[in-house]
Image 1 (cartoon, rainbow, N blue to C red):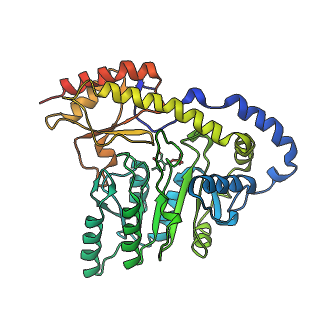
Image 2: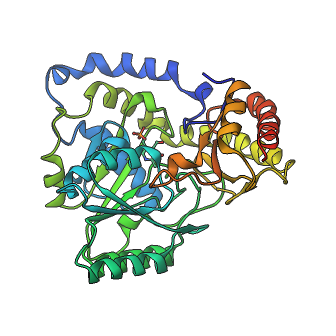
Image 3: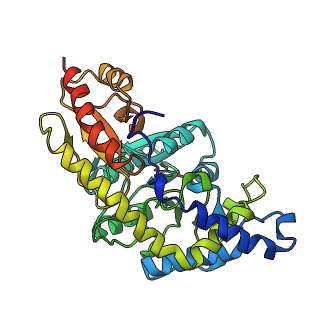
Length: 371
Ligand SMILES: Cc1ncc(COP(=O)(O)O)c(C=O)c1O
């Protein structure tokens, strides 16, 4: 582990509720009878699905029926299932933001998809560029199979797509009959007033698959997330599952803890991570000649930094590694792996002390890597 771990998007480790989850396990497991002797089924442990529905109802003002929600092994399983669902043959296209989550990029490439990157601005995927791309492809009879979008606290840029643009996205998707996959992994990592309804809750002529995670508000080691959409698509996606379902053991323990603590837990970790985000911005601001940020995210876990053009990116990474600073390179988030002059800093996992010491060291690394 690097001394200054700004690389991957993990939550604050000190606030992981070890003891509380242990106590929850002691309360719930003896009551579970033979449930653990059974396979969970393709939807998974009902009480946690109900809790996911309640969580959505509170946040979005509406929720799908509990039997339209499927638990998953993190949100990544949902992300991967979508490629299996919609990509029929090598070269089938998927529309994504030009900069997107590296895990999705890797998974969709592995499924043989052609990744079609749409330029982004501080409000997310650009609709003029999307409309142009689809028109060109429609004229050639080469339409993609679906749209994958990070509308809320985009990874890596941190942007939030405004309501009007969300409506436009659904309109364009409808025009070409393209399903939309909304990865809503950062929905509850919120530090400032923000609310834009998720795509799933907006009227649409095309199916929207909505994916959520507990990794960012609890921990990725728990491996719990969920996805939902309407039938018959949901059934078709579930028929692709070959994993026997999502762990009832993990789901039951987390449900028992969250049953009464979900929002107090979320508020607590958000206030801890907000302090880290604020400190990171304060420090970055002390090096204006080195760091230029794309946006100041109100949520999520990342800051997307533009490096000076003269930065030798390979050299910078090498110096940073030697000095114990871990960050994610811009290329990891470019749909074609292009060497773009960006880096992504994650502020959730590192401690305040590590941020305090690490950002000035990173500034030195960038300075020393100028051509
Ligand atoms: C946008 C996005 N989707 C999905 C994931 C995968 O998360 P998990 O499978 O742990 O829920 C991540 C993790 O960083 C992510 O940033």
